[in-house]
Length: 138
Image (cartoon, rainbow, N blue to C red; front, side):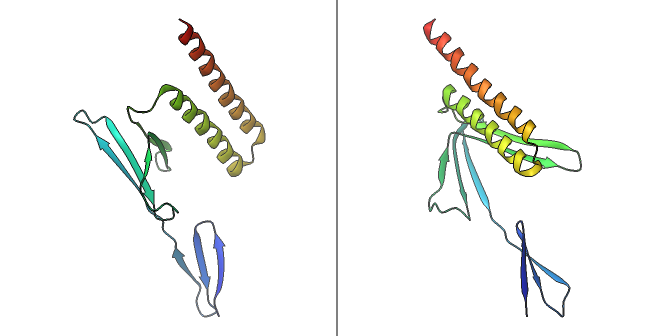
């Protein structure tokens, strides 16, 4: 008789005659970046094995972060195509800040810090919009 317990992305299958066997579920995310002669991104496409989309998805920008626990350092890949407009970039950053705050809330429960992060994000976007209005009048 097997008993299955779920913990995050690992599934533990227990049997009375065995200790614990670990079955890992894997999901693959593929990112394709088309570059010009100067290695400037011209296109970004991605797909994931767990996605409901049958075709590759197009993106104008991407941010990927990894945490290196050995070096205690964040490793980042930030790319955007020439098609990415400045107002889209500001919106992308605003939504990224909000997403980071939500993720931080789920992982730490630090509601006060999350409120500060969201307040910063809102102020950032409002200041960007104000600067855009000033620049468009000039």
